[in-house]
Image 1: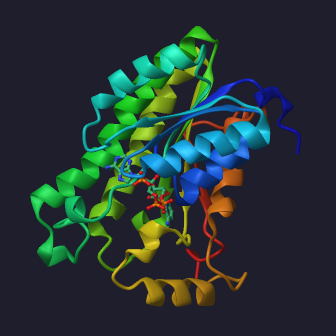
Image 2: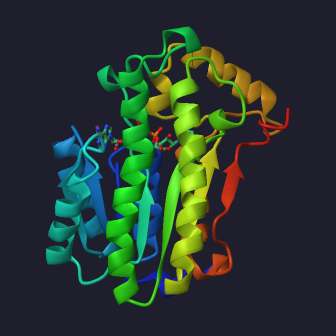
Length: 260
Ligand SMILES: NC(=O)c1ccc[n+]([C@@H]2O[C@H](COP(=O)([O-])OP(=O)(O)OC[C@H]3O[C@@H](n4cnc5c(N)ncnc54)[C@H](OP(=O)(O)O)[C@@H]3O)[C@@H](O)[C@H]2O)c1
């Protein structure tokens, strides 16, 4: 499939250093898209990735620090991006928190605590809202664009300890439909790419990672876990003109696991 119209356009993506975000960064760069991606803790990895992207694909790449627990910091981030790039065409809200901030959120129902739930909601929903608002202002100046949030089938199907994340993902999917409805007049499409379990650091941090991995491979008619590139191709398609009438939609990429 040709994505030639994407060449020379700009992608802004949160969490481009690892897992699904990294796969998205490389898939877009391969199409000649310039990339502004964020990191949180892995500055060195991010800076090496900038060099690698520019050398391999001849595009412009820049990286910026971002903490999605402070969604308003997106405003300053986009001001920095304005200095480096003359347009924003695509925004992908991908980053996810893990470790200490999810304590009381990544747990069983009876152990949920407001602080943990709020952190996950802030990092998932509020960050999507503020990032998308800033992106949409720039997209309006170039006649349109495409916004994507990552989501997870853990909002449709029970995953142990996933109550905080699953409900925040359900909320971000609903928020994306609202955004799509109000941004359509500016030719801005807003969609969600929702994945079944994908082999990344976030999943490896699950208390029951091995169980989820084995169960996913067993449930999938394709007999395997999802890999980051299984979702990045969907993000590329959704942002491209091939998906020009797709908006307010959640595209499920789950290896056939949700039905079973
Ligand atoms: N893995 C799955 O099974 C799966 C399935 C469906 C959907 N998803 C969704 O896909 C997205 C990416 O997940 P992943 O599995 O690829 O995650 P991952 O491998 O754990 O990568 C997380 C990314 O987020 C960044 N990050 C971490 N804490 C941050 C913070 N406080 N502020 C800003 N950025 C932060 C990390 O940057 P540093 O490297 O600098 O720390 C990294 O780039 C998430 O929205 C997730 O819910 C995942």
